[in-house]
Amino acid sequence: MGRKRSAENANLPKGMIFNKKGNTYYLRASGQKDIRLGKTLSEAFRNYYAYASINFECQTMHDLIDRYLKEISPTKAESTHKSNISASKHLIKRFGHMNPRVLRARHAYQYLDLRNREGAPVRGNREFALLSTIMSHAVRWGVIDDTPFHGIIRNPEQPRDRLVTDDELAVFVKYCPRWLQLYVALKLATGLRQTDMLKLSSKDWDDEKGLKVQASKTGSRLQFEAVDHLSFIISELKQINGYRTTRKHRTPLLHWYFFASSANARKEQALTPDGFRTAWNKAMRAAIESGDLQPEQRFQDRDLRAKTASECETITQAFELLGHSSVATTKRVYRRGYSQVTPVTPKSPDDKKKQSIEK
Image 1 (cartoon, rainbow, N blue to C red):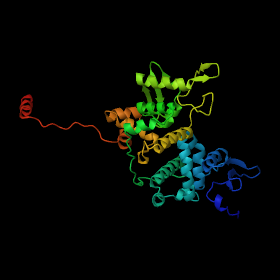
Image 2 (cartoon, rainbow, N blue to C red):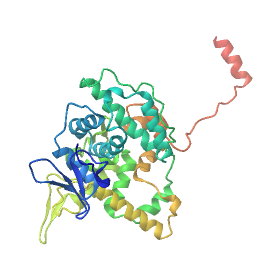
Image 3 (spheres, rainbow, N blue to C red):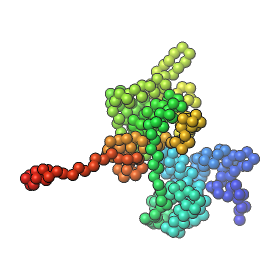
Image 4 (tube, rainbow, N blue to C red):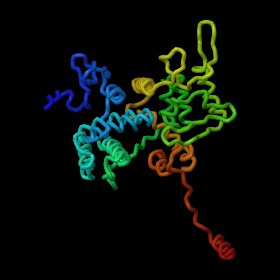
């Protein structure tokens, strides 16, 4: 019988250990030197699934989750992959020891209720969604014959309804660097997700045809017309990131990102989500500390996408602009505030007489 794992390693995947002295995670495998995985748990998990030898026989849920994170999750968007890694830690803790063939609907409900009691009902829904997806792949891999999660009722969720006002936005942008002001302007014009915004580059823009974008989440292909407002925003971004500047020369770049990493002096790398988050939080904190924006008026980058949708004249326009796969999503999540409608006017007696004659 193997030695019992220490408390700090009890909930870690097979082979991963935490060195308290060095405050670092390692991958331990027989016959070779420990592989350094990183100092943070999220970094360690990312590297673990790149190095670890996964047991594809899937005798336990731990094996099954490992296979999904090794084969399927890396093919998703980077943000989705990170989210899967985070959610998998909770799933491994609760289900890792179980045989996939004995998993039933009652286990899903017990998990959702547990996460609700722990104060994370919505997070529990996302973790269950990952578990359900993994079980669907288990059917494809021949591990089980049918997924046990049919018609599961998840924890209730209240869609975010924060609608940013023009005054609040005007205050915030005063504390933003110029590139972030242009990001906000482009976001309000297009309603693009942050993931797609940070990937935009000169190859996506044509002075005559406009801006071409393929949404990373839905695969929708959008082409925004080259209207004057959009052209102005992109020309300003080009002045910031479209040139390599030296002491004597300012050379135009053949390929440049709309939002480039400031850490790269040559501006040939896109700004990372972490880098964007740092800049956004810094500007928001400055706006609040100044007193111009109250703490309860704080808003998030994703609220700007909802603001764009809410200011569209029709739900159809919002649906097409945001590139959703379903109008129901646009209605439920992104149409905030009040919809403009025209009341019904009673018909006059003359209108009724005219209608009778026409019949």
